[in-house]
Image 1: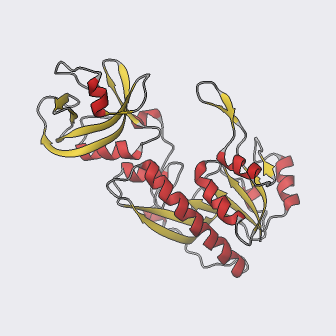
Image 2 (image 1 turned 90 degrees about the vertical axis):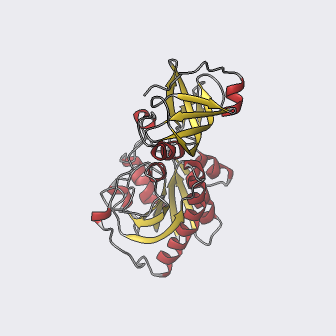
Image 3 (image 1 turned 60 degrees about the vertical axis):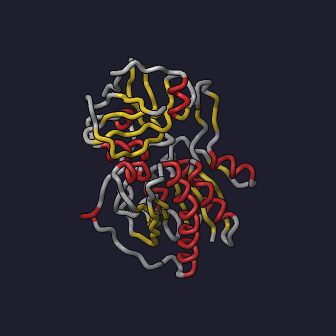
Length: 310
């Protein structure tokens, strides 16, 4: 089957690789335009673009997906199926073009966690299970009929980075299975409608979502830290400076003092929350690199009574 693949970040690369190595034919790859990135604002290529170039695949980088020139390019390619993994919202004039329609790989068990950040929100909300879903595109985002799903356990040690990697690899296998099934059935695989009563949102993460409120329970803060690590990272303010926090540990230590107050004990760093103390394991002071807490404490002396602001 002739497939037009659309994706941008690292999450999409294993899926593209799986299709490229299969019996199916990748007739083109669509990815985001190059953009300035980092402090030096150097123009950066997406991971999907680098894969396409390295493997000699036709590459398209349309600034606007509704542009008539791009729509005509897709028509000329005449894909049997469009496959989307971590890409922009596709307009109907594109996703309705292929004979077998367009499918998406989403990093949640839909209809839970519809939106841009399903991995982050699943961990932030303390979920014990996530997964991947393949589905046919409809006009409304992440609402199409489900083809396959595969659950994945969220362990106590998982953060957004480790769950991302699990779903990225499992997703590539489920996606290829989906494409094979669509091909085998002539575009009519078994499908299941989404239960709208079970839908939950997973909107884009903004800076205000990342600031820690130390008046929350320790477990809730711990899940926030995990759900935002390694990127974009949770943070708090100490002496007017931003401290990013990447890893914490739950304790049974009762709090004494006010919420956000820092307690140093046996070269470990604890913070009072609403109910228990939370141990800080990895952090990044403003203007410095990420480090373990004991390394930070070796170069930063606390006199007592310091607290994170929220």
